[in-house]
Image 1: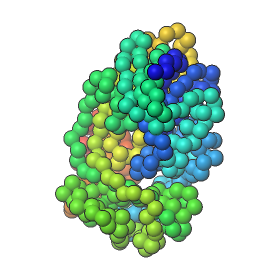
Image 2: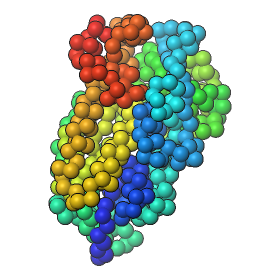
Image 3: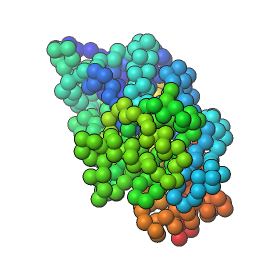
Image 4: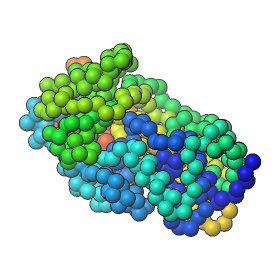
Length: 410
């Protein structure tokens, strides 16, 4: 068995783990990243960065790295929807370039691309990244321990701090015994990468609902688009079976979507995976010797696409604490992180529940409600929904009150 004592061990080398390792290693810290995968798979999520998340990556000094790996900004969102014609939808298009003072719009980039970019940057900065780790075990304590098999050897690490960045099914969270809370699942969301769609504008994203389908379309590099579909559990068979990729493409035969034919002519180049839509959260993502970040600490309903932005802020706050606090990193050193994340996730849960009600409930009444809310928003009614773009802290507390939402939807 090999024993090592780095300052920080990060379990999970995805977006959050790789980004944190890069920032800490660039500032001279000894960091070891323990990653289960040998190659990052297409997980069909985590490819949209809201403007407030773009601002976080900029503060971390990582935005240029994403640009270098093909990340692109969308400049407008067109709400092609069954409630209005395509001409009306285009007149309702939202200019995404002026929403946040530090971001010229949302960012679109592939999940495996981001993982690889941050892993390579971490290694270049001096971190050790061990891919293909098996049987990872974590013991929380003032002197925590992480052990695992790598290249046939049993390795035991005894760092000052363990950071759990190992995603929704976090081993660290389970082994340390963090209590997770969750909403009831209310629908499904799935996605697929499609090539050969050069007609889709590289600076445009589209989000809308027609019949019993809520869809999202985001461009990626060259002629790629990422398609998402949200649908009811009762319709799960619609996107199941050996021909599910074809079924997903055919779902975009939408009357409200002018470029539907271009998408139908595309070629699936990635898997189609679907997940249930609901919030999961850990009220306090810290324990003696352990801190959770990103999805390991709980994730927001994916219908609003906040996952990468949440992770970027987690990385920024935790890295600032670690770099400014040279004394032993006791659990209470992360109190500001716990407090900020608790309120941030509470606000995002409120938004996620509202967004799901508006976007992924179907039928005549739901359609009328969606149109009514859109009109009231245009008239200046207070709404929590803009927080998904500008950040949950940039709206007043009243935006999240039940009375505010009732006025918007009643």
